[in-house]
Length: 205
Length: 427
Image 1 (cartoon, rainbow over the protein chains, first blue to last red):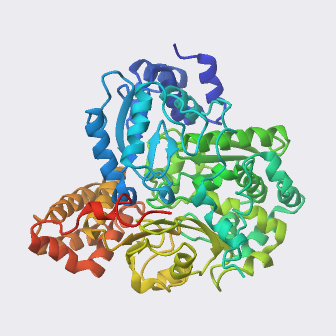
Image 2 (cartoon, rainbow over the protein chains, first blue to last red):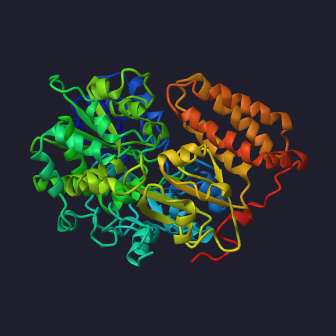
Image 3 (cartoon, each protein chain N blue to C red):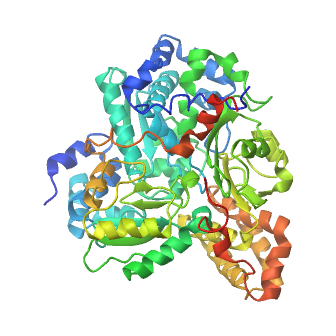
C-alpha cells in the first residue's frame, strides 16, 4: 500500500495552516507502513513544503511515532508508579519472559511488540495494559499473556473498553490520523469504576 | 442525602450515553441554543459569576480567562481544549469523553460564542484510540445536526505521546506542527496563542462544565462547593482501595468521605500516602484525611488540588520506589528545553536509583533536596517543579524510610505484597 495523496490533502485541509497537519500525517504514514519510514518523512516534507529535518524533528519528539517496525499488535504495559505497584511491573516482566523480548522488542513472527508505557488515564482500572492503544483494564499476568498469545494466533481478545475486536496497529494508526473506521458505536460507554460514583448517588449514598 | 452530585456523569450509566440521541434526549444542545441568543459578554459574565475554575490543575477562574481575550481586534480568535490528560493518576477526562463527548462539543460552542472565536481545536492525547473514535464521531454528528458548521467549527487534533503537551504553550506549539516545547510568557495565549492569535486554552472538564451552568444558572452552580471553590467536580480514586472509580462531588469533600463511599482502603491494610491531584502535587499522608479537597484547603495543607487524582497507596508500598518511578517519568517527559529540568531530572533519577536499591547514603537526601531547590521555579514551565513535589514531600514525611534503605543496604519492602495479585481479594 502506498501513501494516498488525496487522503493527505484531506488531512491538511482540517487546519488553517498546513504545517499543523504534520502530526496526523505521521499517524497516517504509520497506518500505511506500520512505522514512520524515510519515504513517509520525504513525502510529508514535499507536501508541506518544509525540510525533511523539520519533519524528522517532530517524528522523533513524540513517543508514539516509531522509527522501526512494531508488531501487528503493539502491547504497552503501564509501569508508571500506580500501575507498577499494583502489578504492572510483574506483568511487564512476565510478558518479556513469555515473549522472549525486551522493552521495544518485536517477536520474530512480527505479531507482537512490547513497550512499557506511561500513565494512560485509566488509573481506576489498574493495572492497565494497552494493545494498539485500546484499553485492557484490570489486568493480571495471566490475562496479559492471553492478549499476546491471542494476538500471535491472530485472534486477540477484544478490548475491555473499545470495539468488539482489537484492530491492528495500522488500523489504529488510521484512527489516530483522524480517519473514521466506523467503530465508534461499538463497545461499552463506560466501565464499572467510571460509574461507581453515579451508582452510589442513586443509592442515596 | 447523597454527598455526590452527578452532573457531568449524570447519564453515563445509559448504554448509548455517548450518542447524540442520548445527549439530546437529556436536553443536550439546548444550553448552546440559549447561549447563542445571549450577548457574548453576558455569557462570560455568567461563567464568571458561577465561580467555575480551571479543572486541569491550576484552578484559574474560567470566566476571567475568557475575559482576557481582546475584543473588536479584527483578529481570528481560537478556543483550544486540552484533552491531553497525562498527569500520572489523572483519569477523568478520558472516561468523560468516552461516555459523553457531546457535552464537550456543546461547551465548545458556548465558549467560542463567548470569546468570539469561529474555530475550536480539541487536542486529545494519541494513546486512547477508542476515545478518539467517540469524539470524532460526536463532532461528525454535531455537524450533521447543524450544531456545528454554522459559524463555529470544531477540529480534533490527535497527539502522539508527550506529557509536556498538556502544558498549554507546548500544546500550542505541538498543534502548530512543532515539537511540543513550552513558550516563554508573556505574551500569554490570550494575546498571542495559536498562530499568534488570541487563544483560550481550557481543560476538557472546565469546558464540559459550562453547558450545565448556562442551562441552570450561575447561582445553581454557586450553591455547590465552598466559599472560593464553587461547583462540583470529578474526583478520581485509584490504587489500594476496595472500589476505585470516579466520584462527582462538590468541591470541599474530604478523602475520608470518598474512601467511606469507596469501601475504604483495601481490606486488611491502612493508608500510607496519597496524591491529592496527580504525581506533581506534594504527597499527603493519613494526617490529611480530613483536608477539604478544594483549591484553598489543599493548598493550605501544603499541596495542590491539581487534577483531583486521588492515588492511594497502602503500607505495603515503598515510598522510595514510588517516588523513583515518578521521577523516571519526569526525566523521560522533560522536553529538554530548559537546563534545570532536563539535567536535573537525570540527576534525581540516578540518586533515587541508588537510594532505592540500598547503595545510597544519608548525604544523598540533602543532595536531592539541593537539586530540587535548583530545579524548582527555574524553568519555562511547571514540569520540573512537578518533578520535585513527590521528592521533597516524601522526604518530609518519610525520611526514616529513606534512611532505612541506606542502613539496610536494600529496599526493605516486598513488591509482591503491594500488587493486587496477593492480599485481599478485590470485589
